Every structure is written in structure tokens, then in C-alpha cells.
Image 1: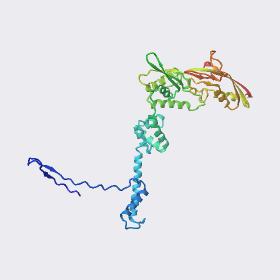
Image 2: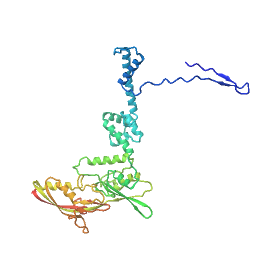
Image 3: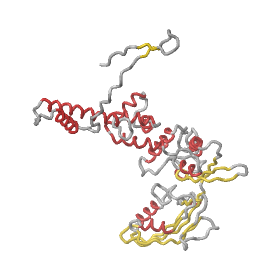
Image 4: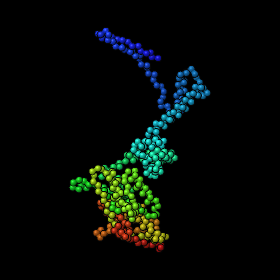
Amino acid sequence: MVETPRPKLIFEGTCPDCGERRFPFPQYLPDTGDDFDWLVRDYEGFRAFMLDELAARFPGRRKWTAADLEVVMVEVLSAVLDQLSDMADRVAGEAYLETARRPESVRRLLKLIGYSAVDKAISRGDITAGLSSLEAEEKLDSLWLREPNLMDKARQAGPREIHTQQRMVTVEDYAERLEDHPLVLRAHSWVEWSGSWSTLRVAVIGWGNTLLDEVPVIKVPASIKGYEEELKKELFTFHTERDIYLPHLGEVDDPEAPPVLRTVIRPYLEAYRMVGREVIMEDAIPMGISMSLSLRVRKNYFQSEVRLAVAQALATRPGGFFEPGRLRFGEDLHASDIIETLMALEGVENVCLNRFKKIGQQFADASDSGTIVFEGLEIAVCDNNPEKPKRGYYRLTLNGGRKG
């Protein structure tokens, strides 16, 4: 034990009554060192280390058995240290998003980087609305415990979302970010000089070839079940996650006067565009295509079956050749692509393209060259709707096969 130091009075000045009290502290104790191997983390390592220490401390003892009290105490202590080491590793792992295993830890770490897993789950409908914040968190934690794959998806989606550029800064950003909107299939952006300042213009291809000043009626053929509801759900989730106003969407004859496509997209554009940047939205320029096709049907197929298959292959429905958004702005149309599409149908033996041109007397037939050239905002359309001949049509002649 270190003794309490005794003070000493030292007079060093000229004044005999002025002294200084000093305490002579003892010398520091020497460092004993650390001979413990801190890299040992498991039962076998702890047991071997302590048995080696016993053998070094008692060199006269030549034999150690499992029944010795010292060995039993070493093994018990090694088991406890192994459990404590595992607990320390688990606690350390919960501090990082990549290694965290508990749902509350993953949820807390995601919230630290600005990703609320609870709000995302509510917007997708995974958690029933109307619950309090604490109840929603508890329900999400129990869901993640039952289905760890959902927790892993959130673990990956959080960093990816916060590192994704969402603002519209460069000219290319305007087209890329607008294409993220569920009702925008294609977008093209460019800059024009207005004489006093530069104006950014954006052209879009709306869902179902809807023009900007038309009402986007979300309707698809009845054969594609569930697609309409999925699109509406995706649209609602898109606006909810970004906290952007979404006008009510209804049918064309809705008494509430549903908004046009421009009104739906404009709040999203205003929320992410650069301040002071004038942005003008424009429609794509649809160019109707006129085609005359002659097909030879195989002898074992009915002509009606082949006619229906051709109509589906060249349709504007999802998966069709003229599906809205499949062709880009200014993308040339090649006859070889259409022939390849039709030749892939069952029952088609040969395809002959007799006419291939843009609608209008000023455009020449391109069946010989096999390519229709498009420029700027032009896109190829072929709705084959008798009520709208300007939006393209084709005439189909079938030879061979079986009648009916």
C-alpha cells in the first residue's frame, strides 16, 4: 500500500516567514504488462490458454487429468467466456446494417440514414393503416421475424434509395427521372435558346399513348387480369413515397372531371426540377404506318387462327410490337423486325411485305429499302383502328392453310 505523503515546508525566499508546502509523491508503480491473448475468442482457445498458464505456473506437476478440480474450473470458465465472447460479437454486429440480425436494429439503422421501413410498408399495404407508430413498428418487427427475406430486401433498398440521384440537375436527368413515373413510358429532354434564356423542353410518351392534355384512363384488355389494379397501386405508392400530390383519377365520363396527364405529372416535375429552370412539356409526334402484308399459312393451320395471332403480335397491348413506349423517339422502323416477329408465329410459312410507308402522299414507299426513317420526336404507331386511320393500319392477305 502506498503511504500518505507527508508535507514539507521549504523556505527559499529572503522572507523568513514565507514558505512553500510541498508533497513528495511516491514513484509510479511499474507496468505489470498484459500477457493475455486477446485474439482468443472460442472455447478451445480459452481452455488451451489457461491450461498452458497452469503448466507454466506449476512446472513440478507432470500430469493433468480431466478429473482434476483445476481442469474442471478451467473448462467451466472457458464455456462462460465463449458465451460472453459470442454475445460481444452479436452486440457489435447489431451496430452495423450489413451484420445486424434483429429487426429493431435493422429498422433503427435504416431510419438513421433517412429510410423509414415502417412508412414504406404502410404505403405498400403490408401494414394495416390506422395503427399507431409503436404498433406499426411492432407489427413490422414480427413480420420480419417470420419472413427474414423481407428484412433483407429493406436492408438493400435503404442504401440504394438514398444513394440514387432523384433531383433533376442535368438535361439527361429530366428524361431519366420522368421515365421513373408509372404513367410515362418514354421521355426525351433537350435545351433550346429562347433569345433571352435557355429553356428546357421535355417530350413524353404517356401510358397507352395518352397525350399530355388527355385524361389517362387506366384501362387494359380484360384478358390481362390484375394489371389495372397493379398500375394504380404503383402510381399511388410512387406519389406517396415522395410526398407528391396525386389528383383523383377516374373514367372519361367521371362527373368530378378527372385531370389530364399533364396535371398528374406536373407536381412530380415541379418537386424535383432545378429552381429557376423553365421546363416545357411536349407531346411526342405519332407517325402512322401503313403496311400491306401477305402471309402463307401452313396447310395444317386455320387462317382464322393465324389472323388472330398476327393481330396480337402487332397490337398495341402489352407485349405487342407496337406497344406504347417500346419504340423510342426518332427510332427507325425496320421491315426485318416486323417480318421476324410474324415468322415466329406458329402456322406462318412465309411473309411478304408489299407496302411499308408513313401515312401521307408526301411519303414514299419504303418496302424496297426496308427502313422507315424517323427524326426528332417522331414515333412509329400502328393502332389498326378503323376509327383512327391516321394512327396507322395494315392490310393482311392470307394464302394457303385451311379456311375457317
